[in-house]
Length: 322
Image 1 (tube, rainbow, N blue to C red):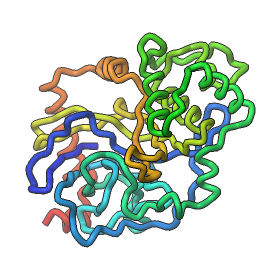
Image 2: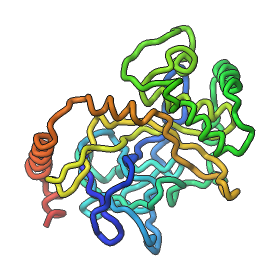
Image 3: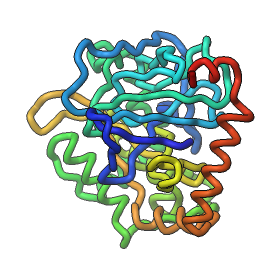
């Protein structure tokens, strides 16, 4: 997808850090696999009566990636297609989805998000209103793995402080380059044990899904609700597309959202935690299909023009363009 960012004054917006394009939240873990057990129900996206003083507008042109999941900066407070149709959000986990009335395939849409990147999205259920079954799933770990992870975490001298401090302590542990490293290579050290436990005690190297899974499960064994999020991080800048960010498959990423008490005693509230070593990931991403910047930008522009005005220029797009 290609994304143009603007601030509340319609001026081009440049993020200070690589943006997280939030996609789908996963909660059910068994044997190395995460699943999502949520029906597309309880959908809403009610824009606030008054826009915040500061916000980020994202103009997104997305190719067909997933049947219903869309992407944007969290927390979002409004979203609509280029034709003006409101987009929906799953109230249980804050996932932005394509309404059934919007045809499948490539889509142009707008997302407006609060500045900051953390917190609950408007319309998403508060912890107090959360389905009890969903909340239990956020701390669920298979019993045999729970005992082993408790033993592992106990060896880290986890500080007996608030849930936010413990969450950041575990994230820092996984980001320690003396302990763990980032790689796309597969393999198992001990195929007889859970792959996340194998990653922690044997391999100590892996891609973002290993790091996110390890952090989420270690948080859960200490009763901190956590979920793994799949989306994209960063992108390639392109001045030819009106100062856009082009997000590719190589930018796919996984991170963690944890429900913790805030330092001022408020909450609990969702925070974003990324335990994947940043420098290692950036180095590997840069090695995937390296292309000179000028050639890459021209190629991206050509693809977008072909996609927008030839392949996908149907009657709805014509009307929206007019």
